[in-house]
Length: 77
Image (tube, rainbow, N blue to C red; front, side):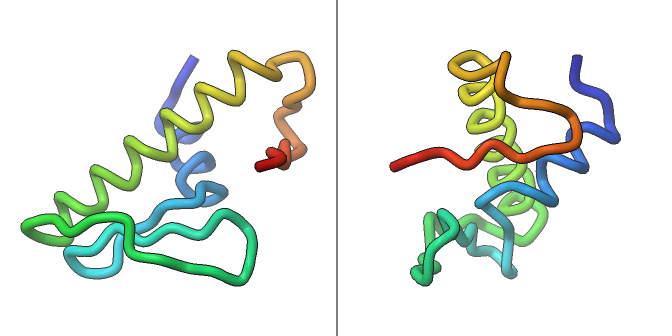
């Protein structure tokens, strides 16, 4: 179940974040890139949060038995 605290944790550990009106991404390597542009910072924050939650949900569905509350699953690309 997603609570406010869980969503906050997902966004802190997620690969997407907002810098002004830009959603930025880094998959854990040396390459950070602009994912998309939004109309303002609030919209970019919402888009980044949604992407992080979708990504977390996908990992839960595929590897739910391997994901623990105190560890991070590192996905192989």
